Image 1 (cartoon, helix red, strand yellow):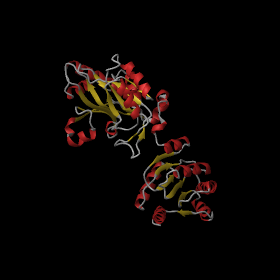
Image 2: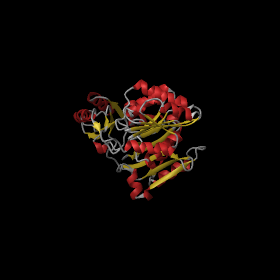
Image 3: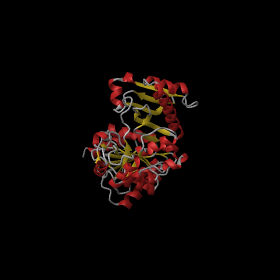
Image 4: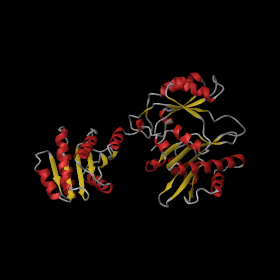
Length: 397
């Protein structure tokens, strides 16, 4: 589950991570009020206005701007709130901005120049350990740094049994070229950041940039936080931070119905029981010359109501030109699934795309007979290749 920047920063702050202060606003007036709260210099203080959407690259799309006075705060917030923000990580339609973060200006003059760093915490799946990835090249795309100057990216693996140890925090600060007060600040920052990641059951913390201010403070100027959805039962307060407006609405609806659904860009809808079979079915569609339009696992109870709900979800996608149902009848009997497909088809009455049904397992022969004798525009198959051939046939019409 993704969090907005302001939510991620609040989470970090609760674990003692220093952050760039900010207040979220849902209108231009609220933005001005927020700016007044953040600084005593209400007429001349500078503020950063940031669109709050679940996407990176907001600045490139015009979603992050600097306001030099309250008038500009009001103007910029009014421009950003309500816009459809297009970034390298959104679709061509972009994402509607419902709120902005009004943040304090932390790039103030002082005894030294501010310096930006990159830092993230995530799981290294190859070793089963968490790791901190960091670089002196903050404030830019880390992918570009990795491609052009990989020697500037470091990582520190953390044993989950011990957590981050003091010498590891010091090594990170040393590799970032810090000394004196900034060195001590960075060791505290890194330790608190890892603790926040661990205790909140996160799957990703990405801070880009981590800023060393002109007076050697270390703080998070941005925060991309992804929480492990499977652990949210332990964090009811964090689960309440979910913003459904930022998620694919078809996926949200499918989740409410108990369906495991992921929206894709293809033209063949999939309805399968079991994640492994679903992945194989998507490969099958690719081999047949099509593109999967979704991943949909109906689970072990593929009755009429569940099949009908799955049909409705798949058909919300106008790009779907065919539907492939691929069910293995182990726990569930194939004849019950076949009857569920028939009942759902009749109940809906407005299915206009071809449907291929492959049922294997318990009572598969009875299921095929039910489909073939239903009088509906549904094609049955028993073998994987047969199903692939039928998919190819309907796509070539």
